[in-house]
Length: 467
Image 1 (tube, rainbow, N blue to C red):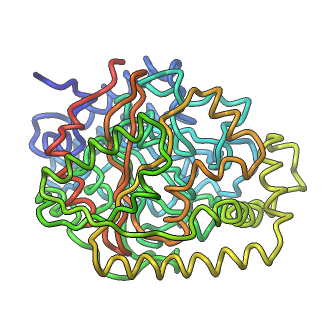
Image 2: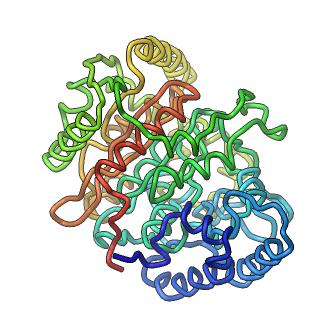
């Protein structure tokens, strides 16, 4: 059965453009026309670069015609989260506060995508300030699989744009689950790399020591190709890792689970999930075993007890990120985001220090575990995607009340280790579910290899929303 052009894999589209079977203009025009048709319904974008993207696609075709060297993403339409500065565009970060970027500023991640040949079709919408809720005056992106269900936060537009075939991949950021939640909710692969593996230069911060920048796409190889393009040391970001990059695309192409030791804490990963999540986790684990993985019991300690204070610590850093505009320009923020920043401003140095100490200890705990296992497994969330109204009630309520939803995500931001989100089926209502593989620092290649083997066994990337 043939696959619609907009649902084909990024890797295949790039190959066909490189060979001449497709042109960058043809693919980009198809993408823009689909955005024009579906965007009024899905609200995935803060900004669409229709004319600019088509002009860039024509230039990409001209480079190919001249026989110039082509990058691995040559001519492929990609979306970037509207936290990323890009010359000629406004960066609103899901709200109306000033982000402070100059008209010529461009994030390193955008520069690297363009250097790899990608066509940036638009800036994807997100929750206000990259936390839990959308600004009340900005329509929230709509889940194309189940319109009444949550589309994830905060990279909601990134997730919706790729799931609906409005881009072949997207850049997300993750402070406490913001790549993983929308990847899970939209049946995508999402990679939260090791902290510092991808530059944060030119990306408006939520919480600097929690924030990760990473790719989202419909297949593991597509994510690997994007990571290959954006990862690496950056002189503009002194926190970037300087270790040589692994061959991420090669790892995905040679995917295997044979003999891979996957650690699981049954109490943590399986003990408190709702029935749809529990059932899907059991199916995913069975598929991993059939493909050759070895499941090993491990124990993770202290996570639930730290979640509220860790959430408050992220909000402390958010208050620092917004110190130039808040509270002086309070009227440019929603009431809820003001409440979040006020929590950060009121959190004591003692509480922040306690979390700083715990995160070092947790990182040490993980490093010891990774001596006996190659990676860990956990759901992305303890519950299936709820209705938009129900999630807004949770995320828009008391700032620390949503902490339990982040029990499988926030700890791994604290530790700074990489995680790979993979689909694991859908609920009776059609809402996708996802789980994550968690690796040691700079362990992205092993995660991608394992994820690709799971993808080959389950064929999840063959399924798309009917929209």
